Image 1 (cartoon, rainbow, N blue to C red):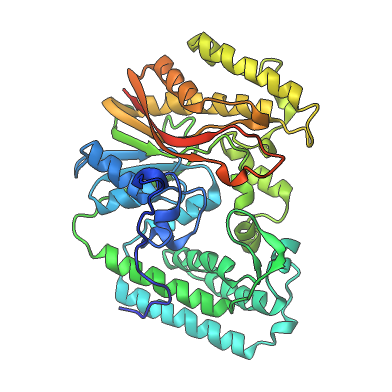
Image 2: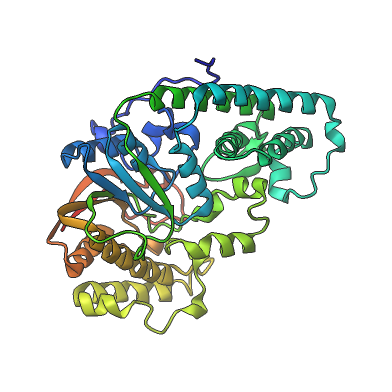
Length: 440
C-alpha cells in the first residue's frame, strides 16, 4: 500500500451535552473518514447518521435506499459498503462530479498505482523545467489570483493541463484529487464556508498538496474496494423535484437525505473557488446560469422578484393544506414588510415561498418512488429570517400528510446558532436541527 500523506485515523463523534447524535447534521464525523473526507464540503452531513438509519430501518442486502439531495455522496457511500443498492440525485453539476468520482471504485489498482506515479513524475518534471513566472495565468478570475501566488497557481495550472488529457476513469480521479488540493494549497483563508483572500496564511506547494491527496485517495480506495459484498451505487445528475422518466414508481425501501436549509446559504457560491479554477464558470452571472437556476430555492441570491406572482405560494399548497398555506402566507407578508425597513432589503419573503414550493414538489416526487410502509428521513434545520420564525419541521411534516404520507415524527439532534449570539445583526430566536421522518 502507498505511503499516506494524510492520516487515515477516523474521527470520533464529539458529544454535545452528552448527545452523540448532535453531529449527525454536520460534516464533523466525515472529515477524516475514508472516502467521505476527499472533498471537505460544509453542506455535508455525518456518515454515522446514515449508518444509524440503515440499522434503525432494518436495511440489508437486497434493499434499496434513495437520496434526493445526494451532495457529495455520503448516503450512497455508506450504502455501497453495507451491500445496499443506492440511488442519488444531485442538481449541482460540479458537486455531482465529485460524488460520481467518490463512488467509482472499479479500478485495476496496480494500474492505478502506476498511473499516479506517472502523473506525479510528469508534473514534477514539467514544473522543474518551466519558468513558472512566465506562464500565462490571465484565464483565471481575480478570486483565484488573490488566493494563490502566481508561482503556486502556475504549478497547479501545469497539473491541471496534464489531467485534462487523461481519459476516464482516470480523468475524474485525478480531477477530484486536484480539486481537493486547491484549498490546501492556498495562501489565503479559503476554509469552508467563506473565502477571505485578504487573510493570509502559510501557502502549501501545490504539487506537494496534490501528491498528499492522491495517495490518501488511493489508500482509501484500496482499503474499501477490496471488501466483499459491495453494492451498486447510481449517482444521477438531475432534479429531485421531478424524476419521472428517471426513477420508477414504488422502488425504494428507504429515503435518507439532508435538503438545503432555509438559511440563505448559497450552495453555488460555496464552490466558486473550485469552479473558477476549472473554468466551469468565470463570473457570478455564469454561476447563476449554470448552478443557481438548477437548485431548489434556499438563498436570496436565487431570487428574481419579477418572476413571482402576487401570491408567491403554489396553488397546490393552498389546495392541499389551508392551515399551512395561511400560516406561511402570514409570515411571507410580514417578511415583505420587514425587508423594506431592514438593511440590504433581503428577499426573505420570496425565499421562504420558493423553498416551500420546491420542497412540496420534492415530497410529492419522492412519495411516488417509495414503497408502502417505507420511511423518508430528512435532516432539517429551522429558520428565522429577520427574526420571523419558520417552523420547518411542522410545515414539511404537514405538507407530507397532504401528499399522502400516513404519519410523521421528529427527533431533535441539537440546538444551533449560538455562535452568532453576540452579533447585533442577528436575530435572537433559538434554532435547532433534527431528523423529520415521514412514513408512507
